[in-house]
Length: 547
Image 1: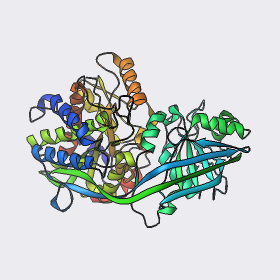
Image 2: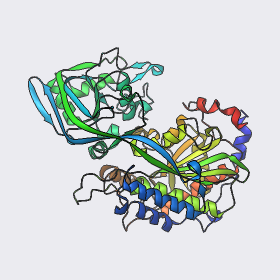
Image 3: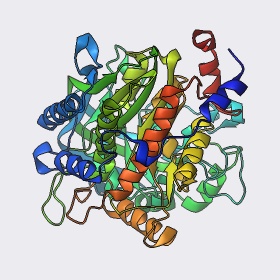
């Protein structure tokens, strides 16, 4: 691989300013119009493999075609098929907790949220013993093993969300409050399957989860998805789900344990699993399983000089469809901020790039499916790329731009240890803006967006989102609005377009994204992972293909 020093110099060209953007520049009206349509009732919450998907795909394809792109999908078309297994609880869930000779009936959605991706048509657990396994982490490279050889066959593991460092006074083995992949609920489900548990219940706490129970309920009562696997039982516990913190505290107390004391014990390497007295869980529910095909949408603008090299703009199109009505009777999870804003940005970027000079590298504009179901669309593309990943220079993923007007800053998600973070900072400053590193590293957003699927494959990738330093009200105002959104509207019906929507801040963010993408697409440089990145080795293995 060539030395990165001259490549870095070539990437430091003066970024394009807003006045240089073709096609009349980034239009706030266009952004708002796309969000208004995609988040409307007609799109039924844009759930994969529903009529809402068909409307979404048709809208995005039409918008990209009108923008002047060529199809970038399979077989000369606009889409890439993403086959998935869909599993949905079918009918009533019965669940109960027996401890100390007494039985407590559990309400699904209130006390617990239960689901299954195991290849069965009915889940039945009868008096399965409960075992507390701390944070449920097996990380030999960090000298950490929460399991200590415990036999979990036939048992349900009770596990804490986030990492052991989240509530400790000083950083330990897990990078302080900045959550690692071990803190994600997806990892915990995967690890407990590897450990042979019959089931797993994650204890929900709002601060370490970074969202409230309403989000767990909305997500958990929806269908869940997985890639088709001939040996799916090996990858999934029979039962999985969440339990309310208050239920956990009560359960531990009845087992003769103190929840907070056990949590503190779990924050040490010496932790060993402990049975929760004679507590046992019984649960039964039917599961409707089917195979579906959902779709990524991909538009292409072929490079004029090096068409075999690629830059990707991406955003996920899916939301949570139709669920339970809220207090106002609205049952559609519209997904306006999350993530119709990102899709609108991709469409608008496609329009202005197609209106201007052809970039040297090929640009792909992607609306990815099933992000809310575990980054499935991005993961599928990374495993089945339509342009070689070794020559994909960068992925600029877009998430949750603000409807609240202009901000002084722009942000990225997580601490990716990737040169793109420095490039974003430099480009923002050239446009009179500032760059804010993720102010909420403990939320683990780096592992919750589609760029993570590309990063795992070695491709330098970043998710760009709104900053908090509002022109009207500063950081305090921005933080208050953000906190209110996550408390009340995240994955809820009230994440909707309204007449108060102000897309001018979104337009300014998209101008920065245009300048950054134009710079990469016209340059010779290869963005790269920095020292300490867990993705650097994967990228370096393909280095000869970029020489």
